[in-house]
Length: 441
Image (cartoon, rainbow, N blue to C red):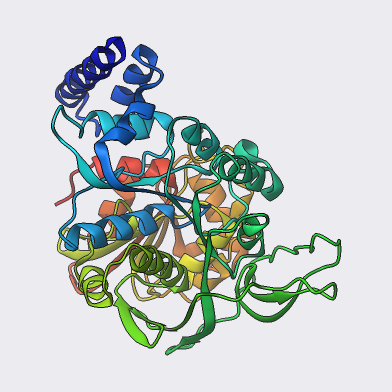
């Protein structure tokens, strides 16, 4: 009984704290209430499982987890089921606690929980939460000062998986690090692309490519390589990309992609091959949950982008596209999609949540912007470093404008009298947070 009292007191504490945060700071309050709840009642998340009637679906990976989990949650909602989801992408324990504390109630239950989890915090989350399903999107180098090398990140996820023998794994077979999580497991679903096509010309990427060794020590060979380490790989020892239950193909266009899975076409309006992977992961999770292809397609059509992940806005009459960049592989794929006829703002911070080490800028394919035809503005704490990187990428120095204030940089990009000129904004994580706090006309 004491536990129940503490649980419901936690809900009261969270709601009171959230109201105060919103009134006093106008912050989105995605974690602070959760932090207070966990200090008051450390087992709070453990009790939340009782309020989920059907499934708890978790999503992790270096890139795409916010988009993939958002898509899954939206598809479930469009299927007339109730879902609780950390919409704002607050994916550490405090963010998950915050989500539950502000949503649950004495008689308020949900059919599904869709929870995005930071790779390093998944192991801790599973100490309190027994998930039914885990979707793993990919593993790329990201914030080496926080996570270390990829083997370290993979070990975090492996430890989490090992805590739940009944966990269903939905794994991206095209990523050799991700597919390896199937080792020793029975309940595994693989998805991947058999073929990738573009209906427009793309330049060969200059971004460095990771070299992966098989467990036997030999370097993996690729018969198809889609980007980074994603593709069809094998080794002389016999190890190879696993066969997929969900074999897919995709045609990538400038403003959408058509993904074919088991003979059915699904159209996503999220741009780029990386978003085609995110969409495929969500489609598979939905199909595995028993949702019909027709309902999934309808949901993909009505999906609205989340918080800087191919997010569109109108700023001073200009169509603006905001795409988060935070590591070499993700940034390089985003850069392939940039409209070179747009005014471009690149806002880079090096706060803790971004990662202090910005050497990833030199491993990202900013050469894709060398033919940019409009304004190219660098902003944020590391605006000068970004400007230097663009100079070496082949953009004429006189074309690069350094404006440290992110708000001012965006206002300059959107001040053209010709409203048909779009604006592309490429922020790091805390720069994105700053943008979302600003009110633009």
